[in-house]
Length: 131
Image (cartoon, one colour):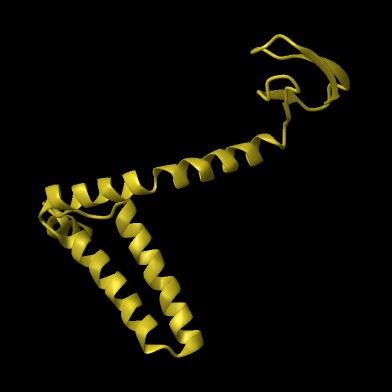
């Protein structure tokens, strides 16, 4: 069975970031359509899901990859902002993140070191904080 699926998908585009986004958007609108009994939302959700399957099974790989690249270029700023926030939240478990009072440079200090003097690597000013 797995070999048949592999043979069927050979030469087809498959799943990418835009495909994942359209499937998730289709599922969310389908849930909203179920709650609100809206025919328009139901049609939009089915259109998203059908479009994502069309892209997945397409043999025009160049066209699908250019569509995905367009999507990635359009969402670059949002994705990087979300990644930075996720990274900061992950680092807050083990480090304090302070801003230099002189130049506003972010400085990462490990937790649990007590009251320490911090030297900014950018402007060389010093300030005291608790870690």
